[in-house]
Image 1 (cartoon, rainbow, N blue to C red):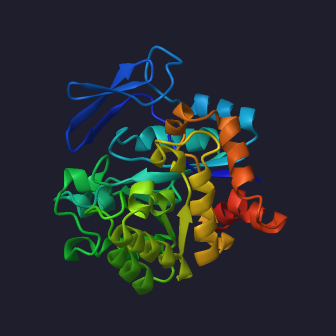
Image 2 (image 1 turned 90 degrees about the vertical axis):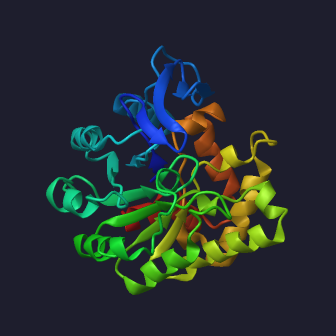
Length: 305
């Protein structure tokens, strides 16, 4: 079974990041202030990625299921994601969008946030496109949000974290360790394999920070997805040899039972087709046994979600 541990759908771009609102710019572009970013291939007039587009891509590439994640950059779409999960219950699993650093976050959680369709909650904490850019003082170990972790644990929801670039304010490894150790029944998935990059690898201090974060996988309730790794390798082309090397380092450190395949679709379509991303996953895990490869490509995600 192939399970993509990180995919996104959005009927429009209506988000926010540290530099201002994000809006669709047409033909795969996103407008951020006065700047236009070519995020997706220019395959249609409006910059959208609907649930129907995702399902057709999954059918085309032979992907059985996908985990729908959300973040501030594309914009909150809990209602749209819930509708998609209801429409395709055998294909899609969802994570709710939530901002715990707003002043009324607990009231929103208790009175307005419907988690019935969602098996997870995603906190995109990165500075560039996430909540730490919107809330410069945001800390995962802040006393005023400690109520959230036991709530998610009690509800048996998975916590998905994007901790941003190595060495950034959002790269809060120690805080995540405390959360995971204090709440052993809370399953935690960290996105993007902790974001290894050639720049971080060339800096001894930053590379130790990455190793420290990967070591969280030694905890029984922490895993990593490998989504978007090609996007962090601007000087490489398919098949992205450094991606395989980073994966091997992670396998050696925490083992294949702690790694989930994911793509970050549709953002990665600017780097490869969905079929090629599936082939890339199979190619980069060829050193594993067939049983280990099956875990990375779907078994681990099935167990967690």
